[in-house]
Image 1 (cartoon, rainbow, N blue to C red):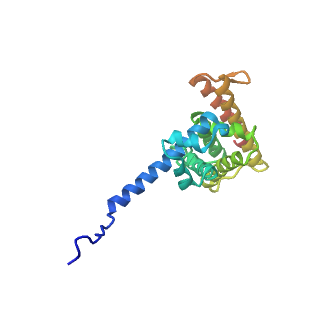
Image 2: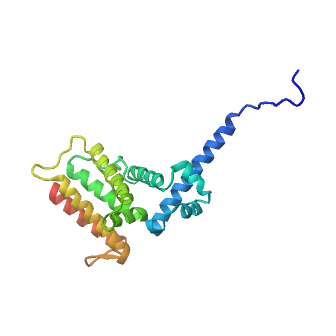
Image 3: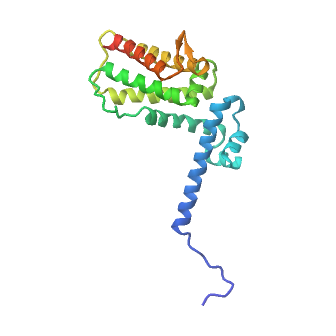
Length: 218
């Protein structure tokens, strides 16, 4: 018979472990969401451990524990950008048959246009790409570019651009045009005299973009 004062070991039950895992996952997500929100609203100028911790409603030590600090947090945001492409620009073509490379690029252009218009953080990152030369911006930019390139590779299969067309250069121009239009519209509701205030305006812009894509790829 064990002594009355003997320590009794209580086994760690499954639900307790699961709760801790869930709590950690929830805290990590709250930190990541707060970091993305802060970047979208304030940029890197006010991006710091204390500000992220306040936004997440947690102790700043948890950011170091879960992400290793700001660099690790930026890496996590970069990884999340890959998910952004998957979520906003799905492999599912929405019932559209991709019979030619032109079909593929028209679909991607429309999805990218809509996704960029809907995401303030991604617009920030695009703006930083042409205005800041920092390691943090490069990481985020490379993550987005890599995810987009991966989408094209997965979706194109055996589809090839017309002979004599430098698709890498043309696609860069198409993406650059989309980015400039969206950024200009966010600032002034227009781009080079083209009004971009309402759904009808954006439909007009989308139609013009499709014609550009088809003019090159057929």
